[in-house]
Length: 168
Image 1 (spheres, rainbow, N blue to C red):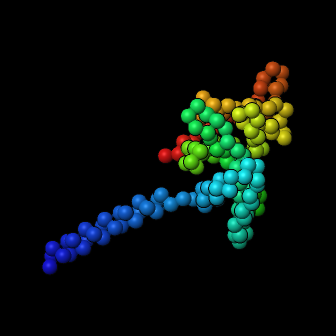
Image 2: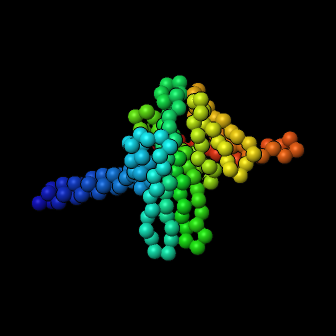
């Protein structure tokens, strides 16, 4: 009898451990909608998702920007803008990078920068509130960080630097 109890407890322990591991790998909502937009394969088509919440705003704007050729593969670019909050909502933006087989490589948090365009195999950033344009190539590699230029005042260029957050 005690052997059966031992086997039962061992089974429960293993089952609980597997359930915990599975739940941590569950995809976030934004990942699911990014993958949905990627599956449509329509560059520059904007998709809007709104989550109804009492006293709060949560909206997603997702755009498959297009793909760029890299040394080993093509890289798909997805822009995600998120408006969230209650009394004074904030808009934050991200650029997610995927392989040609839609495996996520990682993302850049780009604060509230306007969506980039693809031109001549480069990402082009033209922020509506900035004077300067930034061109970024992903041909050789994915940069660990990118500097998006904004203005040039007395010879000094201002802008923001964003770090690439690799997918695990």
